[in-house]
Amino acid sequence: MAAAAALGMVNNVLGVGAVGVGTFDEFGAYGTSNAASEAAAAVPLRRRLDWLIPSYLENPDAFAQTEDMDFGSILTIAASNIAFGIGCFFIYELFRGKGVHFRPKVHWQPEKVPKPLPTGKFFNWILPLLQIDEETVLRCAGVDGLIYIRFMNLGLNVFSTFA
Image 1 (cartoon, rainbow, N blue to C red):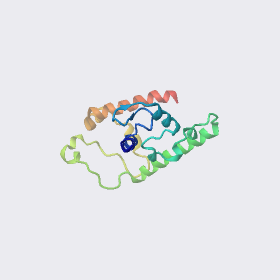
Image 2: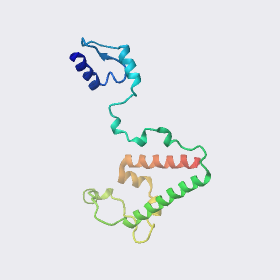
Image 3: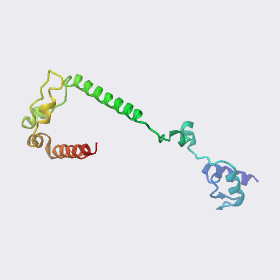
Image 4: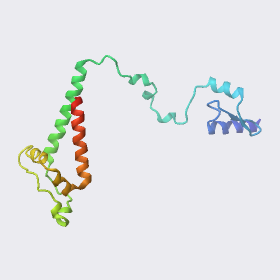
């Protein structure tokens, strides 16, 4: 009887008896038994890591999206995303050019350094940035930078047709 209790503890530690797949019997053999399957069916299925999952995540229906999303909700989401993007852009503009940057190309490879963008006024750097030709990008950033910029332009052209 003590051996059966010890084997029951092994089953609980290994977690094999809890799911009803199989258990160790009193002879140490692993197999399925009807009693273990019936006992496992009576006890709700518990995983070993249930303590990691918060209670509010147990019901996936709580996160189901409503099917009747109206136009006002879509406008609210779009307006908040646009406002957040514009806010981030203004924060970038405020801190652009401030501080010390690590720029080893200035000293070691000055021929690969592009001419600096204008500073002083808000957003006066955007037009000169968009007018940089591909030869300058290839000289300063290399083939990887040029391919990346071409890929971003391709994505902008393709997805702007869908918008």
